[in-house]
Image 1 (cartoon, rainbow over the protein chains, first blue to last red):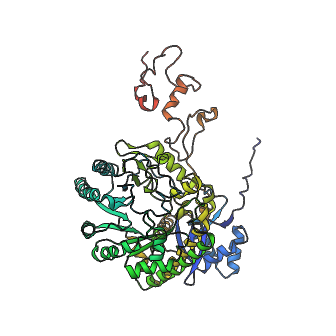
Image 2 (image 1 turned 90 degrees about the vertical axis):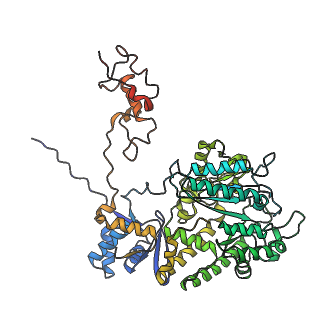
Image 3 (image 1 turned 120 degrees about the vertical axis):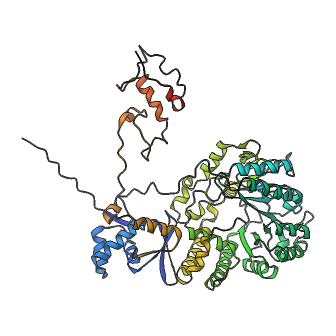
Length: 491
Length: 110
């Protein structure tokens, strides 16, 4: 009888290559940031040697083992090294399908966590770079309500509580225009929302953003009593503040806000008081701004972001100045690290935010919570992905009266998913950046789903800086990092 | 792990996961085997015994319940389904949407 005996097909030789990772060193140690997961591992000499061995291209299993044994590692050590690095995907093979990795989309019924109530779209200042009123604005407020009514605000609160099943705590941010131009409503909402939240068995917290021009003793007392977090939009010492943050007649606002800020910081002790600085043409002296706001005025935290613009505005920062900003960021980051090594908290919040994300090992499907856990509400009750899209007809996601427009929300989130951004697929910083701000992308490229390519290099350099800081702390003061285990308060 | 030290929360989760499995390096070289999926009607460009990438039926292009019509109406799969042409033309009349109403499809008593 004839039998056909098939020879077993020869399995193709397994070849190892480096996985998708970003290497960095800190405090004399080597680290890898694993992009598919957002994980950070410290390497010993052996693991480092494996990755160096693969610098010149893929190696077959026996070649890699031989190379390691030549370097003095036992066969057992070599196998352990390969096994560990394979397990975390620090090294990969062609026979292992990695296509399935990458953040999946959040569920369609993702519960709301926060609303940003645009309680007025009116402002008493006329900051030249404003994304709500300036040349690049996308808002179309003509003919719409200017001040939110209590009825709309109450509906928003009910909407938030109804749309946040399973959450123990929710948050309301008051925004504008200038928020304090509608302080009476703000106060009523705080009372109403606290009552309703308690009835639903949820905790609720509040915060507001203001230009500080309208702060009074009564307002400050109210904010402190109700533990309302305060973010002040301001740009620094008088010469920088008054460059863009002006009244409609062109008069600067520093002299008006300075005494009010001192009172606010002295009297409001229940929440951190944060300054949010917009960097723009001529306003790039980050260290001077920081020390003025932190040391002279007494802010607890200071955060910086370059002005959003279409690239055509004269208030945009040019490339040379952006390099200067990054250099200054790095200097301030070093100060942050020195303080952290002594167990002290530094107020440069750009570092704190990133370190917090690195500590958790976030791997974002979307750059932020806009349209997911967070929505903006305009004075008329229209919903938008966040406060930056308030009153922009192009981005309305429904109304608090009849709920979220599911189809438009799905479209917004599908566009914004990092997996759809071609340019991000080869970038190691994508777990944290995910393509950057939806609003900035729309202003710059006309599509919320476009990667913000104009600041990619910047983001990578900054992320690398923060990774190095993280590494130093992981070696020298790991207890300090554990502070980031507590989820940041909802302020 | 001996050679890699996890230094953030995500890395620690990966460490826990890998220490709880005993996969050796050969297993780690290859994609783990996927669940066996019968070929079924998919060759006829109709979602028959089809499953999605996870081996489930939740992510198909047509609801899985709709398959019944490929047996009942177009009749290319010889199974025990009522005969649309001769004896039971009204069998599916209570089933406007297969996904929702499939429970209305009853046994035929000749």
